[in-house]
Length: 118
Image (cartoon, rainbow, N blue to C red; front, side, top):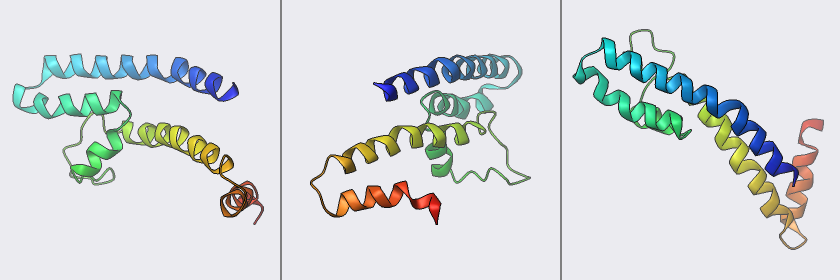
């Protein structure tokens, strides 16, 4: 199955680097910051590792582009989380739509295929 190989390549390519970045950042903050500053970063690191950082920072109303925000060192993981969620949900949605009886969903898939043509 091609999609399985696609996901396997993504995991082999992205997860080791993400894991190194998360562990190195966590260890650095363990050495240079106070306990009070580190406590919120535990949740940030966990959400970055699980590719749900975008939902965590959205729940905290974190503004990625704000100049005066006390940003998390894991804030940049929001874009990777969105990308991974897209790669998980979109193919499953297309498979579900193609497996439905003929009719409207099948036309929707055809429309998605030609969406870039317009």
